[in-house]
Image 1 (cartoon, rainbow, N blue to C red):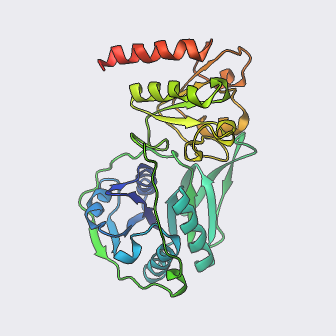
Image 2: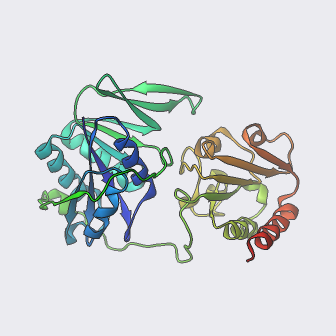
Image 3: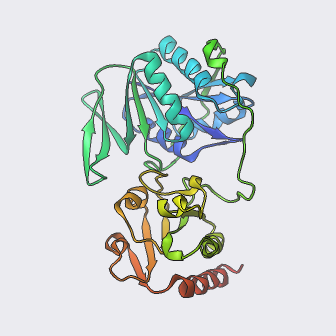
Length: 323
């Protein structure tokens, strides 16, 4: 069983979600696991993949891959799969990875299972695990043939290191289709005040809902997240109201997170939000409504006014951490 794992990177850092998928692939019995890193100036990242289970790392290092555009990456991956006969290609979910996986599926006429939370090897075949009916049940899914493409939900696997050593690194020649070069990235923008971990990678997420009362009150969530060394999330209602950026939305139509600690401030706990954070290790909810649905699946619930409780909690955290 041969598996190729797409390793996405931001700057000079491989993404934790992709490394988690790589570690999972390496745990699948006798699987022959390789990884691929694509971009410009990315060759130094290859050695890190060995610590997470990649016996071999393909590196496509070229200026033509500097912009995070999907079609050039589809060209490289399609050639790798065809030339080396990879039976499966794994992706950790992100905007770019989803685009690349969909494009590769069309290019290879291959099956793509998406939103998977696990995969196991059974009788020499891969079986994916996928939530359904708003995460109330899990179903087994498979593939009719190869290549088998799998897109895994964010936070499904921990990026745990293995006993692997230095991987074999192989440079990949770039051969791009003419149509894949038609799109050009004019500008790439980042949040001006972005700091700390992303909500997908953070060990602590402090999320705010409409119960905060106003966009200005999100400073409560930001202060607590800063004290805990975490990231700030938001519900769809908050995002739709323009209180907080869409990039921070947690939920069925936003991002799925699984931090060690999830603190929900003024969040009622609608099923759409629950889908995005229910796999968190510890969930703490603060809400003045004792009947809020979020208390049904929280590990710790505090009934009270967030405007009174959160500043005191933030101050206590600062004192304990000496900051």
